[in-house]
Length: 167
Image (cartoon, rainbow, N blue to C red; front, top):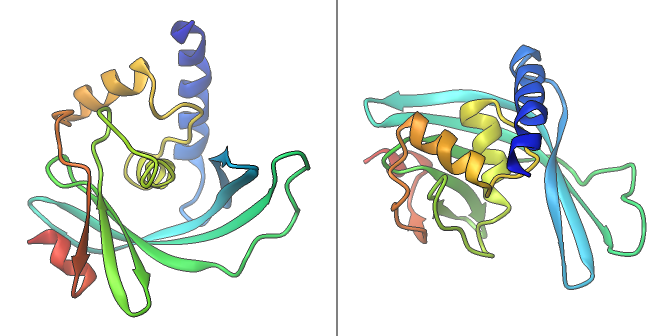
């Protein structure tokens, strides 16, 4: 069954790679406890890089709706978050009440409920890949090919500054 997704995933990746960085894409979301949500990827800007990876500012807009209804046509006001593209310390970073938090990710490996929505943003930002399934055997193989070790820690850490993730 996974083999049937490979052509679709390849096609979607090719489309995303051909689009300008500012193209609007709706990233796959999820439904849980009666509510559904997804995010519109509005763009990315490289803000720093090192030997360990690249730090991007990403613009996203979210929407949510009751599980039994259709998604609304409108999204919330866009917000700025950050993604650190790294095979050693991949992370999704967001600000809450004046504090930055980083979700350390494990592409191709284990994931958890608190960070499951971070993976579509990470894969889109770092590898120009937009779904449909970020947790399949195909994605594990892709992560291995890209150099991810599959045993990275999944955690939430506090940062004083977004660039602290690069240390």
